[in-house]
Each structure stands twice: as structure tokens, then as C-alpha cells.
Length: 66
Image (cartoon, rainbow, N blue to C red; front, side, top):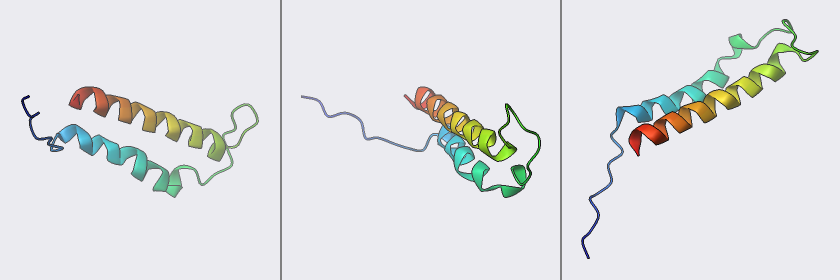
């Protein structure tokens, strides 16, 4: 049985995975109470947006390096 080729993780698409790590660390983005969305302060709905950014980045990297 033939051996599979060695795996390389040198794809430039992997750099996209830094975005969901660094983005929540930028506290100046959510250091406010306003604007409010459905009564929730900026911090809460921005955290949900960070989750969507993380999922999107992960899916893009997975599909591009598959």
C-alpha cells in the first residue's frame, strides 16, 4: 500500500487563523456601552460577531487548504 505524501502546513491561508485570535484582544473595539442592539450593549453583540468571524475564517482556511 502506498504511503500518503507528507503533510505540509505551509499554506499562506493558515495566516487567516490569526484574525479570530487577535480581533477579540483589541479592547478599543468594544470599550463602549453604545450602540445597543435589541437592548444589548456593544460588548455582548460584538462577542457574538467575533464567534461568526472565527467560524468564517476557519471554514475558509479549511476549504482552501483541503
